Structure formats: structure tokens, C-alpha cells
Image (cartoon, rainbow, N blue to C red; front, side):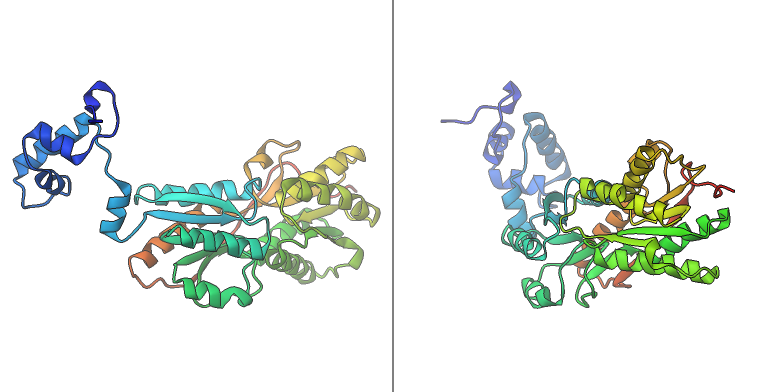
Length: 352
């Protein structure tokens, strides 16, 4: 069946259709659409205008073969339900789209083996590069990743050790934790609790370390009953909220007057527990989170938190990937960004 012109609203316009309409050979059209100097400027402009008028769409497969690229990027997150990744992926796309790249998104469910399977699937689909967000890929997978030969950038890695052949972008978790605890100390709190999680081991360890450092520098010895870390496996917002809701009462019973939470969803769970126990926030108890997700501005009271530059992390990760694809040397291999404290209404001086 002959293809009909796109002027009538049909699709499927080919180079041969344009050549027929322009009265030139299809090789001339092909050269004109590539801006080849072998075709006069006047003819190029006429053919390109005709192609636009007819609704011609270049063949992506043919373009990929010609460029040696698929112009696709794979992004692996632990869970598409985690609000942390909304801004990260948005940052990736803000850089990818103008560069002509499409983004494929998949989740690992916080399982290193599943993460490796997703990476291998992306590799089979011939993506040009991969971004791993909150990756749990460890040294035991390093050889397999190196064999693939696909540029990989990690954003907010949760692996215990950094892989030398990979590149990464992360926030300074310890510094962020210190900002949170120093803010509570400046308000007059001395009995400050911590609620953490086990399913993001690297960042939890560093935030807990920053919490302890800030207390000790202020002359406060952290007490064992002030620290509770929830045993979590999958990564879901519900799991984080439930951790805060269940563990906050233990800190209240231990006599703490404030809590620094691993992330904002845990902090929201702590706020729910305070509401259920009729503990006024912040007049009787102060709560601080980490991440600065959009929801923190709308809970009651609005949450004091540590801002992670999530969108910028995604943008930097994608920029690093583009540099690697262009054969450029990327230094430093591992970028660490500074967090910022955002003070809202969930913190105040402790009760007299």
C-alpha cells in the first residue's frame, strides 16, 4: 500500500516521499536533512522546509546506527515510590533532554541482585550510559560491571565502598547531620534522640556519626537509649513513616526533648506519633528531618530539615555521564555536595 502524504494528517512519511514531492533524488534529500555541504544552501532550506511541512520524523534506529549511539540512558532507583528520587530524576532529565537523550527508568527494590539484573537488561538494550541512584552494588559485582564497558555514574550510593572505575555524586551526610544537631543544641536541647534505618546503610552510618560528633563537641555524651535504628529491608515511604511512628515513643520515654531523624519520611512518622501521644510540637518536643522533600512544607507543623540538593545531584550525574560518553576525563571522580539547614516550625527551645 502506497504511503499517503502527511499533509492530509497521515503518518509514515519517508525520505522517498519527500524526494518525490521535491523532485529530487532520495540521496539528495538524505544529504539535505543532514545539512551536507554537497547540497546547495537554497536546496537544503527548501527540502528541510518541505520535510517539516509533511511531518517527517527521522528514523531513530538509522540515526543510532549512524551516530554509534542509541541516545538512551538507563536510570535505576530503589523505588519509584520514594519521593527522594522525584527531584533526582527530574535533574537527570533536565540535562538529558536538551542533549537529545531519552531516559529509561527502572527500580531495584533495594536488592543488589535485582539491581544487577536491571543493569544487565539496560546493557542488552544498548543504553549509552547508566545512572544508579542509592545503589547497593558492592565489590562482588565490580568485575561484571567493568566487563560491560558502559559508563556508570552513581548518585547517593549506599554501597559500603566506592568503586574506582565508577563516578559518583553525593551529599555530605555527616555534615548534614551535624547541622541538624547543632541547630537543636543552639536552641538549648541536650537530650537529643536519633531514629535511623538499616536499609540505607552507608548514609545511615554517616548521619549517625555526624549526630554523635555534634553532641560530643558540645560536651554531651550520647546515651544508648537515645538511638534507635529500625530494621527495614525494602525501601518504601510507608516503611520509613512507620519506623518514626513506632520509635518516637521510646525516645519520649527516655526523656529526650528532640529528635533528629534519618530522613523526612521518618520525621513525618515521628510527628504522627507526637500527635497520637498529645505531645505538642515544637513547644514540648522538636523534630528535624533530612532531605527536604516537597511534603515537608505542607505537614503540620512544617518540618525543619536538612536540604539535599537532589535536583542538582541528578543534573551533575547526567553531566558527568555526557562527559564520559564524549571521552572526556572527569575529575574529581567522586563529587560531594554541601547540605543546607532549612529551619521551619517543628523546632523550638525545650520546655523549661
